[in-house]
Length: 383
Image (cartoon, rainbow, N blue to C red; front, top):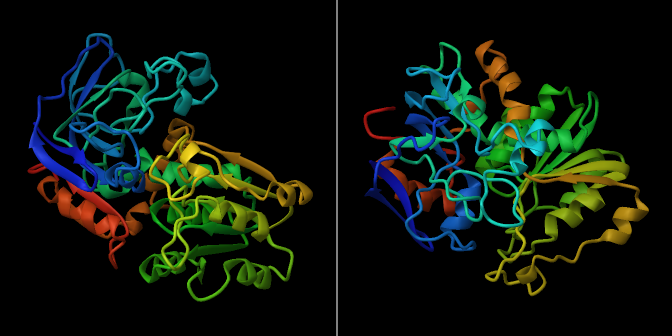
């Protein structure tokens, strides 16, 4: 099968690799028709993780079921399914509590809970930027889509990761009707967090970024754009909230946060959120942070540590929730919003490419070239 393969820092290739196949009775085999490039893929693309060359990338996947193992009872051949990026068993103690991002059985690495497709340190599972994808525990992990799925793939594929993750940010931040919400980062996940906050009837949504195309996207859904290359985001947020600070804050950038001059500061957005959110406010962090980052220019973060303004965080009585999204907690209800015509998350999509064009898509997306807000791939002949 044809697949997008990691070859080294800033090098991916479209190669022929052995076909994905069912290996266990509970497996489902999916012919991938739509798959996304995610901002999380860029950490691996840039060589900032220990992903081994030869791995197939891609954890935002949708397609048609072409084979089911003898132990599969719910999913059927011909179903269109969206697959959460979490690889979860459904029966361990964490899965039973809804913590599918921290499944106890699917990652063989000692001391690590949780697995994902095509992702560093998240188990041995190849990704879905390919013609075929093996889905373990298919009955549990496959979200069977409604009958309009073939025509609305660019909407439904967002259920694999970025919309549930944006929703998760607002859940961690405890966003409620009428709240003022600030979101640091207006990439795809940040835009989905802003979108989610509007669904929860937030009174004011502010989006901090410096890329005009991303800020324009945020403004399309009523968010107030704040360009941190032109003004202090903290000062602007305090001005908009009459000196109190936002009720809730969402971190959707992660450890590769840069200042407007291009210098990397892994603690920048977290500390800005402490300053931007009111006393007793709540912060949700879904931007990626990793245990060690030898490639970091920050000496502390090489060891996974940051200089965090904990004294001010404590003094203000703030609360923070963080971590990867448990996609299955949200994907079914968000799927209903799409099917009923209430939501169109494909509004973030800027480019739809054939699988063969993936290397160029990675290059443009990684450079944050103007207009490249979200890239969707279609394996040849299936889009």
